[in-house]
Image: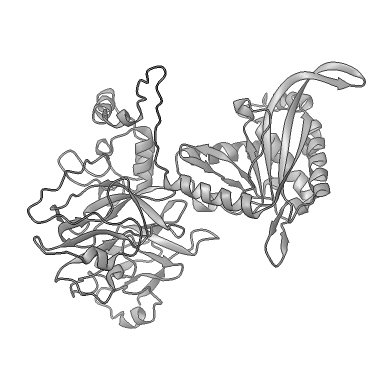
Length: 538
C-alpha cells in the first residue's frame, strides 16, 4: 500500500521547509535509509532519509519550492499503484503535480499565474523562497547567460540567502531568453529571475507583466544582441570539462571554506554524490592542493586593498550579505522593542583560576573560564527563574529548564548555539559541548535544533582583551550576560591593597520581565559561585 511522505518538522520552531535537492526521481526504487531529498530551513540544509521501501510514485514539492510542515512531499508505494486518491487528499501545495507525475507540458510557473498568457513554451522563473524566513535573495553567480541552452536539472544560478548560498536548478528546458536579476543584485521572493523558452521567442513586456516586486529587471536583449559573458566564480558547480559535480550544499560550503576543489573528491553517496564527510575526510596531495590554488588566483583580488597616497580620501563599499541583513533586522527589533537596562559587577577570579588549574590537571580535561561562567549562570538561573523568562503581550513565561545560548562569531556574523539543560551538565560536559558546537558553527554545520530554545545567553569578548561591554538581548530571552577579560590589578582585601585578578560582568535585562532588584540578586548569586567555585560542585 502506498505511503504518503510529508514535509518533516526538522526543528521545534520550523513551520515551512524548502526542497533544496531531490536525490530520487519519480520511478526510482527506494530502500529504507536512502536519502530522498535535502530540506532547507533558515538555519541549515538537512538530509531527509526514507523510512519506507518501494518506488517513488509522486513528488509533491519541486526543488526550490517551499511548503508548510506536513504538506505532501512524496508518495512511495508499489510500481503502477493507483495513488490518485492520495494525491487528491494529500493537503499538498498548489500545483503539486510534477512533470514526472503528469506528462502534460508545463508552460508557466506558479509565479506566472496571471491573466496575461505566455507564448507557447515560455516559462517565467521567479526568485525562489529557500527558507521559511527568506524575503529576498541575492544572485551570487549566474551559471548560464542569455542565449544558452538550458536542460532540466541544469544549475541556473547560485542564490544567497541570509544563511547560505544555494544552487538553483532549472525545472524546465529551453533557451535562457532573459535575466531579470544580475549578479550581486538582490530582489524580493517571487521577483522575475529569468525567462526560459524557445530560441527567438519575442518576450517583450513579459517580465513587466509577471513582475512580483524587487529590483526592476534589465531590458531584454534583442535577438541580434550579443549577451555579455557571465563569469563563473565557483568550482563546485562544474568540472573542468563542463560536467556537473553532484554534492550536497553543506559539502560545497565546507569545501569552499577549506579551499578544496570538489572535482578532486570522489563521492561516497548515491550516484557518486559528494557528502560533507567526504570533504571533511579529504586530504589533498601537494600537487592537487597547488592545482586548487592556481585555479582560484583571481578570486582574492577583490579583497586586495589599493594603495592610497597620503592626503587622499578612499573608501570601500561591501555589499551586505543576507546573514548580515537578518542580524541587523533582529537586533534592531530587539533593541527597539525591549526596554534594555544594564547592571555591572566586578568578580574576583583568583579562586576560579586556582580551581581551573587543578581541574585541567586531569587527563583529557580542558575547562575554560567561559565554561565556568556558563555553569555558574545555569545554577544562578535555577535560583532566580524570573531572569530565565520570556515576554509576550498576554503573559510572562518563566522557564524552569535552563538552556544557555553561547554567542559564537563566524565569518559573516554571529550565531548562538544552545546548550540544552545546561544546569544538569558538569563543567567538563559544558566544555566539550561548547567546543563541539563552536566548531560546527565556524564550519557552518550547525543544525537548526542546535540553535533553538535558548532561555538565556552568554557573550564573551574577554579573549580579545575587552574589559567590559554591553550586549543586545537575544530575544525571546529576557537577559544576556556580557563577559569581559580577567585583569590583574590592585584590589583591597581586609583593608590591604593586594594584587588580584578580577573580571567585569554586565547583565542586559528586558525591563518588561526583569526588574532591577531581580537582576541584581541574580548577579550576586553568580558572583558567589564564581568566587567560590567549589560551591558549583556541591
